Amino acid sequence: MAAEGNDREYVPTVLVADDDPTVLSLMKDILSPLGHRVLAVQDGNEAIEKVRTDHPDLAILDIGMPGKDGLEVAQLIKDNPETRLLPVIIVTADPTARKKLQAIEEGADDFLRKPINVWELKARVRALLRLKRFTDELENAESVLMSLALSVEARDATTGDHCERLARDAVALGRWMGLPEADLKALHRGGYLHDVGKIGIPDAILGKPGRLTPSEWTIMRQHPVIGERLCKPMRSMRPVLPIIRHHHERWDGGGYPDGLAGEAIPLLARVLQTVDAFDALSHERPYKDALTRKKTFETLEDEVRKGWRDPKITEAFIEMKSHEARSAKRGWRTA
Image: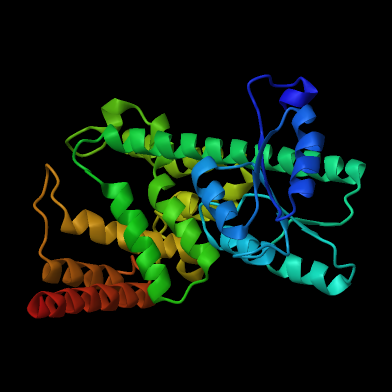
């Protein structure tokens, strides 16, 4: 942090929301000398607007404010995927444990009582800003991985927006199957990152227009392992690793890299590979035309009979896509 001399370019922004001007002035006097940029507002609505426009690194919110109170603001911050990692400190003069529990339930990361203890405030702010810096660095690392995955896709001009389509359809199928939100997030990331390991495959193999030789196939089949290795150091990527490593396994055990069969193949990998197969069949490639929707479904069902695909997930996917088509047709008729 700038105040500690570790990074002169980093100036953390702290949002302080309190309807008491004296408290706001005190907070500025305490935090500004630490090298922090302090944004002071006097009601909850202003606080939400500042979160939206100024992207603070920490929010310190008084419970008793006009407009939206501190608990309402905290809940809005934590319910928004774009701001849920913003650390929040709730401040109140209420000495009861009930308020503290309520603040925690609304997603607050910490709790302070009035009158403010200066040293306690400094310690809490320092700790939460350190946490925010760490999570920002993780997000930046994830962005690098996503960019890397898209650069892999760009090496093959025939795939178009393949990763984006997979991410969208995998999440839709997961939602159709009733999977929890954490799994949907992993499927979204997996849609983009499943083939990131192809960064380690030579262009001569990756872009070869004809059939690969056995030795070339051996190299190509290493891309799930390479992709897993690239993403493994990041704890936030742990739910995605099974998708990356196992999306080329087959229901009958004939896939790669580990020859897993049936339900030994991780569920999310089976979801993504079903969507991946549909995308490959239903889009044009230099070596083949795109299949019709009906023919694509028939081919997927044939692959189930051959033992390549999970029967239940394939059935769920076809039901979902058929439902989407019917809904789109009804929407067109009523337009």
